[in-house]
Length: 172
Image (cartoon, rainbow, N blue to C red; front, side, top):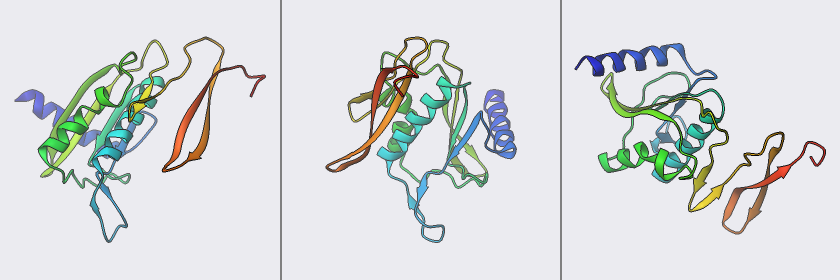
């Protein structure tokens, strides 16, 4: 019971501190402010995977889903099964060979609303790789080489990101 109380206080403090280099808020809703509807689960899982990879490749941090950018707690309107999918995004949307050093992924109730809290540390062996729809977005692990992202549009898969690996600074 005390662990839940401590976590609840930590989450409330994190929300009060606001977003930062180590903390990200993500709404579970989509649409215009006056016409919100619950967000697409597939998109939310993808966002969680991307955010966890970004933080793991930087300095680690916290991701709170169900909280608006301004710190307003709007909760998660999805079913329990959908929430389980969100909690498992670290496994389903991150390449299996480069898992995120996840410390905690839990559902917690704050002010009567469901919020997801992800806590993870910095990956000591960069890079963690993002995976979506079975396509791995891999980054090089070789020193002194910079991965370069190239955006292209193809068919129905607009905004798909391809990684061009092993480019030196001179090649960029």
